Length: 294
Ligand SMILES: [Zn+2]
Image 1 (cartoon, rainbow, N blue to C red):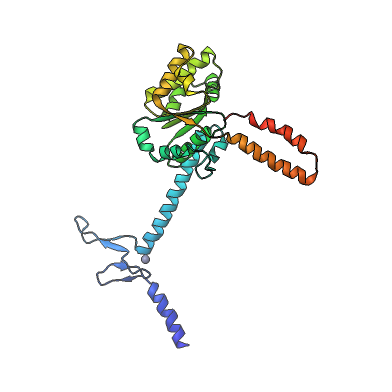
Image 2 (cartoon, protein in one colour; image 1 turned 90 degrees about the horizontal axis):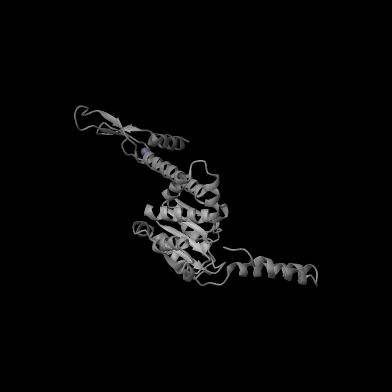
């Protein structure tokens, strides 16, 4: 009985703060000082508070958590402003199915971002529909925004809409686009070639060029058609693009078709389980999955 009481008493005594031989207050738990003595005038000899080891550890833990939350907030805000479509948030290296042979170059770009930025190197991602160009660009966008780099991923139909509806004025809008460290224009060449449209496309591309910041473009146009434009209005746009962006050919198979086929097979299977003979109807759906562009 006496023994137990002494144990409890000793434990309490151990966690009590105490004054050390040097006159400083010590923490009873970690036995490191909670005070320090000023060694310079005018306050020489005064005792001031400091964190003991366990208080410091707790402080560091909270500080790391605060930083982590702040980072997540910053990334969230960048992605909210950076993407025209929230589905682009899913286009990440982590979600990649590993089937696009060019993906290595997306990793390379994100990993060498500082050099790409300094040397103003962009990509011109070209090739057939559904080969994963937009996904590739989205992976770079997500990876950079996760490092708190401001990226804007948009397309010219959205830009032209905004320019028409914009109250802030075209120049301000284009200036704002050019403030993003990386600008990604998806589906270049899909916009209708009206004179007004072409003029605005040129304004955006030329402003970006003059900003000295990199641009990534995805397009279904061929490199040959970009190098041999039909008229001077297109030529001045394409020339700028080819000056800023390294062309990368997407050779892969059509992932959309593949996904559509897989989905169709799954659907057929499901239907077959339920009822024989309905597969004919499923075959009709097949043609409809292939029209989407990337
Ligand atoms: Zn302590």
